[in-house]
Image 1 (cartoon, rainbow, N blue to C red):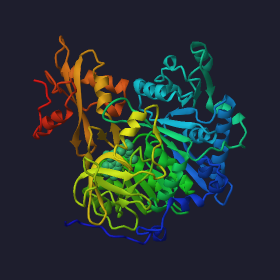
Image 2 (cartoon, rainbow, N blue to C red):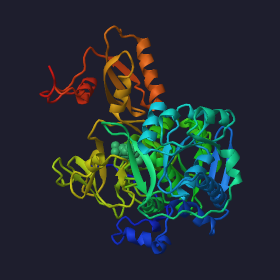
Image 3 (cartoon, helix red, strand yellow):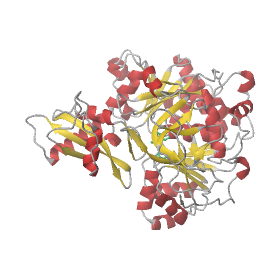
Image 4 (cartoon, helix red, strand yellow):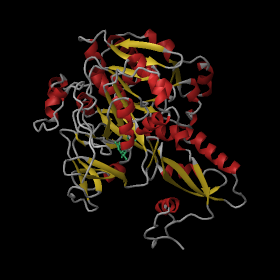
Length: 580
Ligand code: PRX
């Protein structure tokens, strides 16, 4: 097979760190380099922040934060104090190890103080993306039985307080508008706190709550093709993966200024927006607000960002914004650029070389895997279109539909040998779903199809199931369909991902209307808005097409693959199970 390749541009990379062929690597050795190996006492927030504040990085900048109205920086010592105060607040409220503390707010320094503070008292944190609407928030808080939510007055409107019996405390951040007393009267079973006002009263020193390395750290909800979103639980031990991939894949070095563009509501924004960089003592940039090419380039220019981790949709949007805008900024600080979340088009990599003079390094992993597993290392020859090779200490393969390993160049199920440190430990309150990932003894089955070439490069082919990946966000068709049929005009709905040059896929819905409703542009818009306001903006179908009837199996299941075949003009395949 002939593949183009982009070979190493050594120069700025710390190649000494990187050992592609290092066969002696094992996770146990990484574990031994941390004090908790001896003491048995672990807390990721301590390792990420306090350890540096107590050492040579005390005054090093840990966090640069900016948005349209704020521009702030915090040293590791500042971060230690701020997170200690938040932790003391949680302690005072009575939060104990293992309780779920949810954080539902836009990026701000307070989000990071609160999240790490909650971890310091042993709580399991659950970050929620700010775009979630009431239904999505309800599902997650209900399933996790969270006792605390930290949010803003604006977003509080989307928290159905009256329906969440487990929820005891609401912490309001940047509260200028709501009257806590009025709220307390309306919801007598919930305690309200004003974060900015009260947190200052707490001590900046803290007895960190030490936990076991297998204790819960974080819950990220993610979508599958059926059912409600699944709560993926990661434990403190995952830090080994975050630390080591931060070192070898992000290539974080002492003077780096690192910027991960993902929101902590998604796993990239925690594993590599919080843990990976800070476990390595790096300076971390957080930019609030929405995407704009000017803002993004300005962020790189302003902070002299050296390592930049983003996503294909963002790179495609930047490519679409044109090369002229690039020239208005000084991006010469960049030395390492990486991508995750969807297939990274070879064309985008070539463009990156042209305009940034950098190869974009693709990485593959999932919410469930907690950290990077297949990557393009700094020192590696890049084959555009490939996700890269396995990380040392990780074993990946391609299995056929019976669970047998396939030889190179044959497409099948991408699977990982169980036992890497950041593997999810459970699906919250759903053991059945958890087991589905491990149907073949010893393997975690990813749900992606791929092949591996003779040289160990993995090539992504698609999802095995109907999960949609739109602008890097994973959307379950079932969730969208369920929301669509709640609209009074909708009798049935089938939802698919439709290929899109910028967003990877867009959501397309096929809808059969109830009797008495007629198709119109207004109705399309109304249905779209309905999903937007009740589920989430990114889950709203960009295209809606009315059909008299949808293709279904005899047992009544919508046949999405038939919808997809219609849409893409492909053969519909076996229709023997379809109803007449
Ligand atoms: O289909 C794969 C795709 O994203 C899925 C995981 O989505 P999520 O849990 O939201 O996590 C995204 C960020 C970690 C995978 O099953 N995916 C992820 N990375 C890549 C990718 N597809 C192609 N190439 C990648 N590099």
